[in-house]
Image 1 (cartoon, helix red, strand yellow):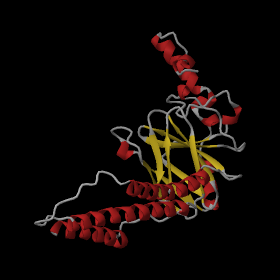
Image 2: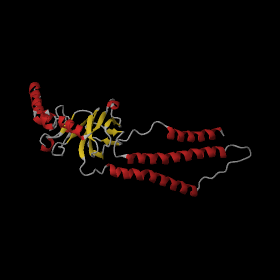
Image 3: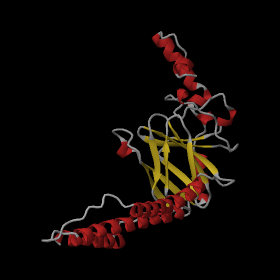
Image 4: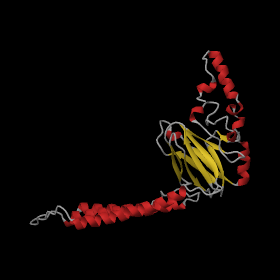
Length: 291
């Protein structure tokens, strides 16, 4: 009897905690309210299943408790019960998966006219690259990454000359304009996560992933890495600062282009060559960096 009461109290307490808890979603700052709705649907379905299972356990403990003179019956299987449970479970799983698939289809269906931002993750910081006046990002190769060329841009690609390089963990975006986030890792698995934006996607070495969103509220929102990526994982943080367009344009003009960087001007290769001569290494800087 006591066990049945404890189980029932567990269900009641869990429901009250969920309804009255001060810990809930962070304030939404983008167009992805559909993700919140999907999470709520999943939460409700799993909550109903949890309550039903635990209450059934409480009922079974009470109903089939030991009593003198009453023997238990043995029923090894029930096809009717198995069919009923299989059907209900299938409906519940479909009800959880369907909204997520619909939202996912929207999540990767980038609208026409969206701006592009490349997110580069590496142990243990974030950097960003934006296209210049041509609106196109230049080609990259991780084998080209060096101290002078941290993004690994191809210096022979004219489309990358005007790319804007944000060597900082702080990214600014204009409010109310859709943006496509292109994600790239240069070392291990990372995960770009901005809770207020409801944006979350893995960065897989050797692959390029993406999603899009429209920031709808100005403010500063924390970037987290949601994938364990080494001893400095907890320090891999940054900020997305959503501003009005009149504040965004001056910031944009402050960012250096690849053509202004040592790798873009050829200074990086010159320094490498001078270093090789000084050490007698007998290799060019291009060979050392995989060009």
